[in-house]
Image (cartoon, rainbow, N blue to C red; front, side, top):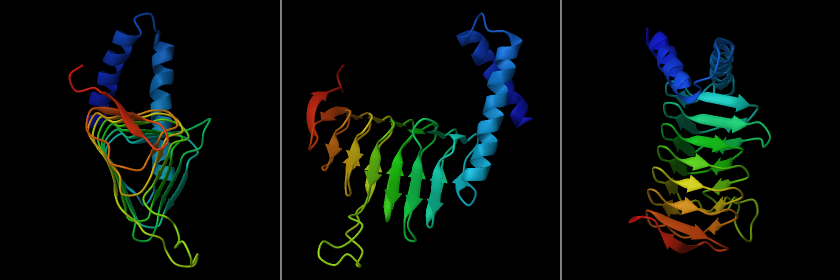
Length: 201
């Protein structure tokens, strides 16, 4: 019943957004959705998934810790391959309706991504230094990365350990984020610095 309601809802949405779209286009739309859902079951086995989580393409998923994906999360791995990793003590939590497109995420402790977040291709998110500065056989320092709801992260951005990005913030293309980003703020540059406030616009 829940599936039929979802299909009916998507048909209404499809008709609204594609007034000239025919039945064959809609069938293709539904089949693509089914394929992405099956893909999610294959690639995200062993992960906790909400409803209608989908995977497009062939991501690399190495889950040695915990991965959780909320309802309607989408992972795109077509032109740019998405790579998601959690270490034995690592947790990756992605909130509902978020999109990861060709993103590289490495969670040794905690990377938490909020709801309705958009992350563009070539973005890298890390919560650790991987190894000690002097002894490469010892683990490096890890600090959680927290990304709030409704955040946009543009292509080739890098988010480093210990960073919190506030709700509604925007990270510009190529930015390297080493410090906390206030809510509703645009940051850019290397290292990333605030360039615009979005709260009253």
